[in-house]
Length: 277
Image 1 (tube, rainbow, N blue to C red):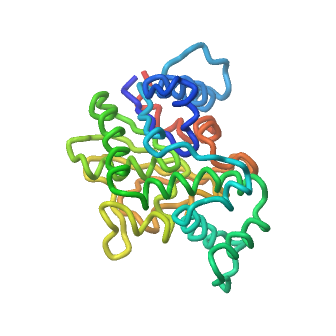
Image 2: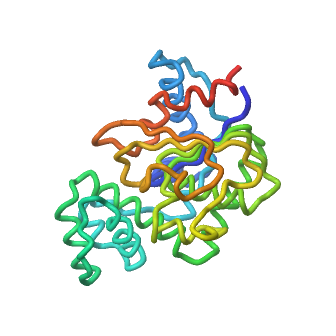
Image 3: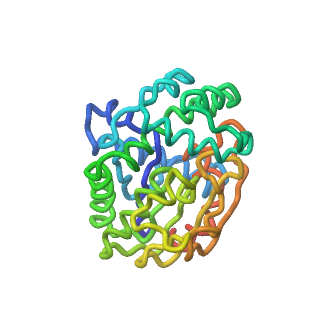
């Protein structure tokens, strides 16, 4: 098999904590899970016999800090930066009326009353980490990119699979390090096109409303659940040039964003087959 590097998404600090504050331990634990999830998708659910698919997980969650998740209360307790991300994200949900222009805390309260528990739980994880990466000092952002770049540079994989916020870190990493060449980039549940939250703040910034595939990426495939509230919009071709193929999937009306569902859904199989010996 040609090398595959995975870049994780949000809510993964616990792997670092459970591994005794070890980055390598967290990455190994995550790789074991990614292998199982991918095996399900590649084989149609056959038992996993320790087959290895992922060379390494690029781990960066420890650089963003731990999100304190307490369902709805966690969202209400967000700092201003995280709440701003939450509001900008939530404005894009179909359920949110365009006439809501009240104070930040009133809008947050209004949204939380209308979001189900799963969405509130998700936002509690999603917004603080996105805020930490996108709006915090440039040092944190640079460290996350450096961590991902180091893993890609050391392994020289043919394929990079990036989930959730990891797709944003990977996109910026590949642009910032032109020596990194990737044959296939697969983004899963990507928020890269999310207006006012991520898209306009990308580095490099979009030009005339368009982002661009990193120059040393040969092919880019984007896969998103049609109802994934992180992948807004689910399709990236409307705002990025160089997206070669897109697939809309229907994972689970409750479990709409986890990497387990994405890796196990089978949508990656035709794209990974050329790289499987």
